[in-house]
Amino acid sequence: MRLTEDKVRRIAERIVDELAERGVVDYTDRNPTARAARVKAVYQVIIDDLQAEQEIDAEVERILATYSRTLKPVEQDVLRRKHKEEVARKRGFVL
Image 1 (tube, one colour):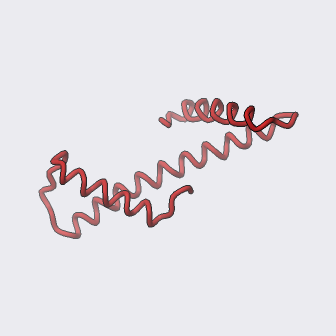
Image 2 (tube, one colour):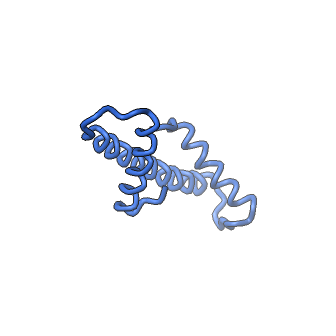
């Protein structure tokens, strides 16, 4: 995972707080326990998304490993991006 769990938690807290500050969401229950539950829900969505992308990356690496010749770095980048978009689309994942 590219982000530590602590960073993801801080991002989740920021999202929850910013939504309230900007008036996008009006939380009826403003106690700390309710906020913690909201942060946990956002945190879990982010973690699930990161894990799905990590699985896509692993599949792309397996695909690239099947190529019979050694790829130049530029070719690898282009093919990695192409395959990642294709695998994500097949899985219904938006990058």
